[in-house]
Length: 292
Ligand code: PLP
Image (tube, rainbow, N blue to C red):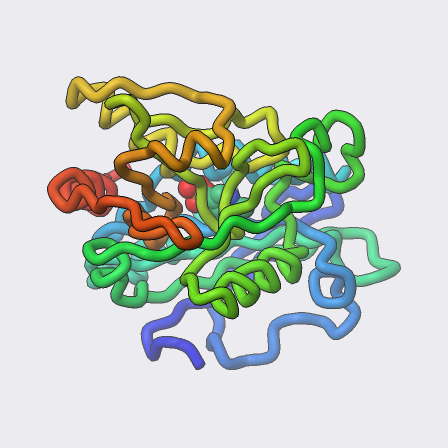
């Protein structure tokens, strides 16, 4: 079930992707055709944007990534000005809440039709204070792909934020079966990638490092904002090729994403990882307080 303050906006999209109209509707009203390719094939793309006191956070990079995911699926280019307005309308409706989120979805539309489908769903965020302070345990899972998969097999859509997240969710369930809270994927050639819904940041030799984005992962909007903030704090950052062996010597790690923000990692498989409570709190204060 959803929060009583949930907001649903349905878009009328032209075949070109242009946003022709937006309607705020009852979130419980029927909204999706049973033959929509979002539902029948997971054939579409999405973004989830956090909202802090009515301000969409990292909206520009989220929209840029939506456009790049859409291009990878040969979908009509999303009308970014139209989508920006939709996100702001939902954010305005949720502005009384300290933290909220909006998920925007663009699908290939009803099977056999001539236009994409679009909607935006927003609601207040769950309470992530335990994950942000006590941290989470992650299990390393084989992604089953080499790190060059985006180049060798672009049809696998590695690096696109598609609606086909069933494997990501299956990975998280496997992590839970192994006694962890979240998964962290490793490529078949031994590079650490990302989680099912988050990027990894590790501290190695005093430097905050994150996997390079050319290994078939999503370029994270949260990670990018965090690295800009860290640089301003005098903390060095870099994109790196990171192996499971490197993780053994990390003295702090985080899974970072738009709604949960920075969840410190307190264990990777059986190895405990120290939680830097002070830095984690500073990261989350910055991420939650963003006004753009
Ligand atoms: N990687 C994957 C696979 C994701 O689904 C997400 C977000 O849901 C991220 C990384 C983190 O991206 P962002 O920080 O932009 O939310």
